[in-house]
Length: 198
Image (cartoon, rainbow, N blue to C red; front, side, top):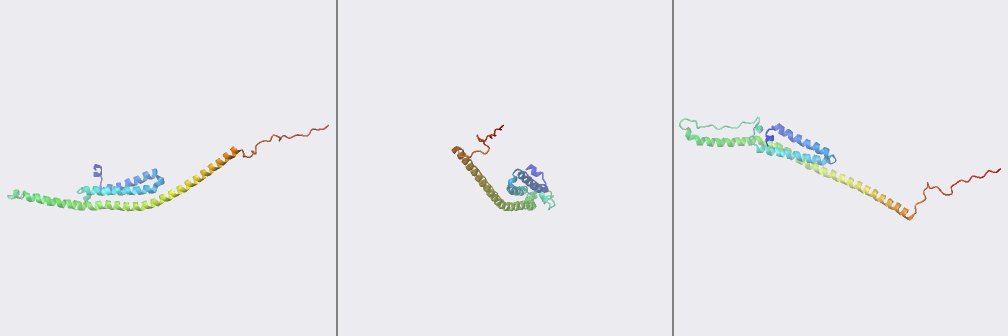
């Protein structure tokens, strides 16, 4: 809370965008194969940041950061210094201070409310966009899963075919039905030359 107290309104707006963009880039690099889900998660995180900022503004009503350029708070007049009857007007001073304090609280709330609503509106828009993108991400994930299953079935078919070929080769070796290798040399392939006559 102390860190948030040192931020101006413009910085609070900027940090919600910068932090969400940083999360998108970081996790987009780590899980780039699921970038569609990373975008959805970053949007939801952005919505949470804006909702938190709106709640923070409402919890710090009366902060001077939310009243920049707006109407100033009221000050109750004091009648305690009135000659002769001043001491009898002390209850009136207390009542006036209570009334003016209530008016100032209302003014502070009226100044902070539009700022908080701005953050909450951004949060709502981000959630709507995230839900729409989540629907698209589900479709993309289903297509990717379907393609992976097709590739897996293809690989399994290749493996099964190779196993069948290997079993066939083993059976041929065990039964001795393998053909004679073409490179084997025959025993009677020696060439006999005719003898020379005198």
